[in-house]
Amino acid sequence: MRGVASLDVEDVDIDRATLAVRGKGRTSRQVLSIPEATRSALQAWLDVRGETTGPLFTNFDRAKNGKRLTGVSL
Image (cartoon, rainbow, N blue to C red; front, side, top):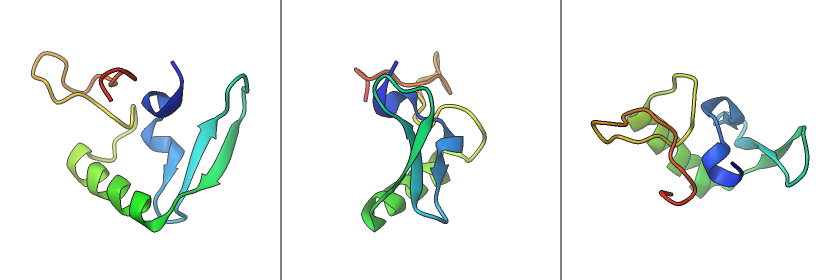
């Protein structure tokens, strides 16, 4: 699993406006700055999702509530 679907809450630092991502074929994470609009959108999502650890983007379906979304579902 790669890309946005593989991000965890711990990868986002709202206060610093950064996101830790793993590049293709890399094992370590690279810290990237994010634009203000993205920071605001992520904060709004975390307000709904909650800031508990785990997958950043989760399902709200009754049967799969809290499970990681896939790249297809995003």
